[in-house]
Amino acid sequence: MKLKLIVLALFITTFSAFSQLKNKPELDENFMDMGFGIFVHWSLDSQLGSVISHSLVGASNDYVKKYFNELPKTFYPNKFDPDEWARLFKLTGAEYVVFTTKHHNGFCMWDTKTTDFNIMNTPYGKDITAELFTALRKHGLKVGVYFSPEDFSFLDNQGELISRNSIKSQITENAELLEYDKKQVKELVTNYGQIDVIFFDAFKTGPIVQYVHSLDPNIVVTRGEMQTPEQKIPDGAMPGPWETCMTMGTQWAYKPTNETYKSGTELIEKLIEIRAKGGNFLMNIGPKPNGEIPIEQEERLREIALWMYVNEEGVKNVRTVPTIIRDGDMWFTKGKNDNTAYVFITGQKDWFKGFRRNFLLKNMKATAKTTISVLGQNDLVVEYWPENTPTSRFTQHKDLLEISISRAQRLYNDKIWPNPIVVKITNVEFIKK
Image (cartoon, rainbow, N blue to C red; front, top):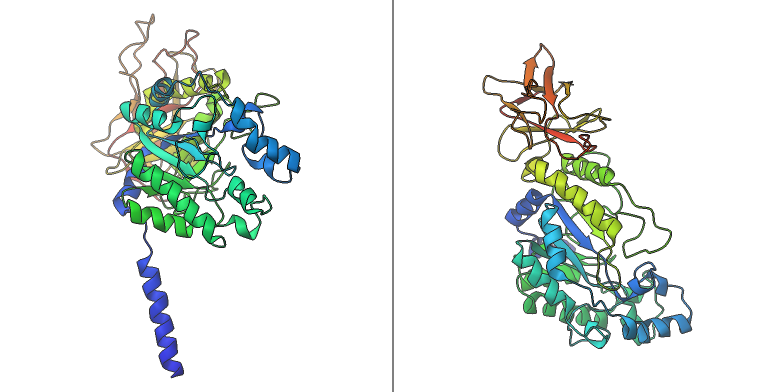
């Protein structure tokens, strides 16, 4: 009898493991191809410039009541222009946009039938989620949903302590909350067109992940199904798919005071590092309460847009180089289906238009079919310098591949572009040292 029970237990465990629904492998591959997405953290507490949702944890009863009852009355994003957002996101080279439909506070940015704590019960009174998703699809961007299964408003209505660490905050321990979340997820998945990506932000996500897979197997679940490092990049390459999410400054939502932003160059170099290590970069913005994107954030988006216009070939549809990720100031990716190397040259100061620099590569070897070029350039002309021929060249030494390149494209008026140059080298052999 004991042996039979052991066998039965093993059978149940095995059956349970095989019955778990997962992302489709082909959708994971497509996700890895995209490389770059925009994260949008926005909710009614952007009016205060506070951390999104978390100011409710440890707050007095008076604060909580004002937050839930008074903040909706003043949330009026009358300058929200979803088409303008989508055009800007498209320019950056992003392939997908993940929008906070509901953060931990429980405020719903769509016309939900599950709670009055939603965008329709504000002076704005329009379905922001529907407006944004329509604009994203119009401009060819994939639609992503951020959804928190944890819900402070729901907990408060249950008479529970507002805390992410309380037992009842997790859907695995709160059956009523799970059913509530399922109704909301079903609204988003069935009423708003094809959802491409969902990011579930909770400590316990299993039941809701399985539920969305059962509703629509063509949705890629990121957090809840794959590694999603937050505000950091792994030390080395990780097998895909995975995604780093990171803020431009120090806060996810709009922070009008005491904010410090990363430079455009720093954000571009983080994108390069993440792609060299095999991940996607989900870069966050936090709109103002009136619906505008803060100028500091727009400036960085447009700096990234210019760089991606020139260099996106080395970012999209690429994979890690099997033999090397980085060598000094150089990072590497390779074509998904061929032996094309992309060399991202960072850390170059005052590289004036038309001047040539040489670099040595240790882990790749040229072949008879190898070609070399700089992304964005025709290698034929330097403006106002007719005697300068900026042709890219390479020389194969015994153990090193030497490349000689000129920065010929004029991207800034002062002729010095501070961001990384990308060299494309085709038909190379990757050498393991």
